[in-house]
Length: 232
Length: 293
Image (cartoon, chains in turn orange, yellow):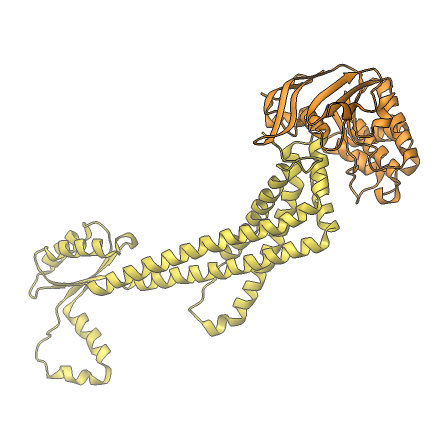
């Protein structure tokens, strides 16, 4: 589903965003990508939704190759991927329903189908009662759930979450992680980037630790607390 | 439908920026309109001056009617001749008498008519340049029976130089006004687009095509351009009407001129918004890190 072969991302002359990355993501997997701020987690995610391309190596996402994808094909790839961010990226001038509907409107879905899908996804993220609220009337956790709903309404095969709990309180963090696990349980792969090592360490899911642009650990076992210190 | 809805949403939700963009567009289009009016009048003036250019061929005395007819035929067979009018000795005298007015009594002293008959020869516009006039005049002069040729040689070459300089200045001014309008409008629209950066990011993320992302912004720009163009054209028309009576024959203004201002307004909106949104499409999504590669 996702394959990354020997990928380097070089931003400026000698500034490596990522170095010698090899990675495979299977169908329906849940993966934590962890590491200190600035280690390359976001860069890895951007490679997957092809906002950037590798300087060397190749990224393959559902049959689209980074070396040969045309600008015109990028929207087609993105329709198969859901992405959420730390800052939610909601449209402040529209209510919850319209924010989610927006993802379908821009690809020309019929009004009837939009309503059907949005109401269904609102129920899944437990926000049906907030459908008419505006983002500024919601808590951080609720806003992130709206963003998740917007990402999922297109029924992607994978959800890329870039620090989704970075802007919410501990209770909301638990709720969001639980929601992501539920989403994964229903068959959607989830790749969640976070620098909160505590959340990841003892999780039963696959964990990828990145440091200075390189993968230093890729395991289902528990991560050691000193992992990022060890490899200094 | 979605594009139309989004365009109107953009116009109604960002009133201040829409107003600023409209103001900048209006001002650019007003200047552009003034420039157009000046250009049209400049060309009319040039046309009027060029209309006066003609070759007068004076004939020898004692030519028969048949000889005159055959000369006329010979001249009209030359390239670039638009119209030939024969002026007989009597007609020349009559015109001269009229020109003298009160002093026409002086002519009574003459026993014979000293004025020669002539051909007034008008040329097509494309032949009204110093080189072609000279060549044509030489050819006419070579026709037997022609005594002398006059066409204001020096005046023609001065006029030609002035026209060339004026047209060059006008062209440069036109380019400067057009480009600076596009530059200023594009930069103003950029501010409007910047306020909706997140919207563009989201559209890119959920797989909207570039055309789909750009369309509402372009439609907004076009709507603003049409309105600004219409208002600018209306104001120009109003000002013109106010001064028309005083300016008399000098100022000319046409409906096409207003249409051009409105069309330019539409283009300004289209190009301006296109340039602005394109810039944001190249920006990274979700992070302030460059796109790399």
